[in-house]
Length: 290
Ligand code: AIR
Ligand code: ASP
Image (tube, rainbow, N blue to C red; front, side):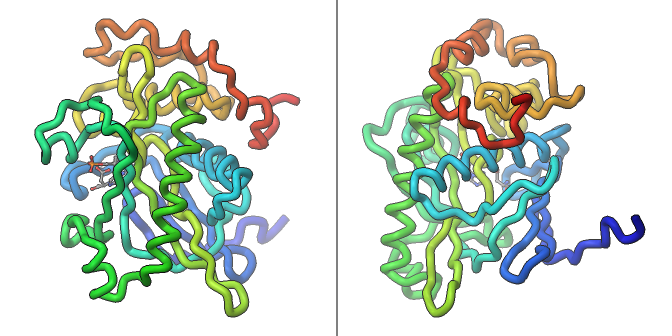
């Protein structure tokens, strides 16, 4: 029929996603791209099929979090690359929760990657590409009027809860959650304001290591030119039971990847099968078959 897919009104384009006006007031369409950047966009590239995979993974994880009482912006999946989300006012902070030393933390403090931090450690960065997302202290957050203390209390509470829930969920699928980056927004309802989890949760925003081999199943493969990036993203989706069944994203397990350095990594997939996968059974994403 004629105007089946009317052009959408673009609202914002980020490095990995685009936002369009949603079909109803207070909603947005979040579109996942294959574009990948690292080091504050100094490194740019494409991870084939990433948008589709991240859309699925993020939908799955946000839905599980919603089930567990964490308010999120996610409403429902629309298609392979798009999901409907609540329009929120993003708090311009990147909330990083770390369980193990890695990345910039390991560099800064001379820690070994993979060293346990004992208990989760939270860091705040200002979400500002021009400034390179610098660290920001809580005092700065209040002094600059970025958020109120009560809001930061909630952000902290939810960030720890998300980390806790996801650490367990991933572990059940043979994946260790090393660290993750979260973003929160303000959702206005009547005169009330609700802090909700926004953005995405995916291998772009989490460090995910295989529990037995320590193989990296996340964007570090792209950042560090390790090879096998697409396969790693697919492997995460496969283990979570949300791998879209389309020919491009089917087939080979992670250990078949051309990852030059996965020399000893023959075990990336067996653990997945052994996983109890409590979440898998009720994956409300597109009943794969029924
Ligand atoms: N992150 C930070 N900025 C953008 C993203 N995606 C995520 C990384 C990693 C965590 O935050 O993917 O999971 C910590 O990153 P870093 O580089 O500070 O160690
Ligand atoms: N995506 C961010 C950037 O382009 C950070 C990262 O993921 O490394 O800088």
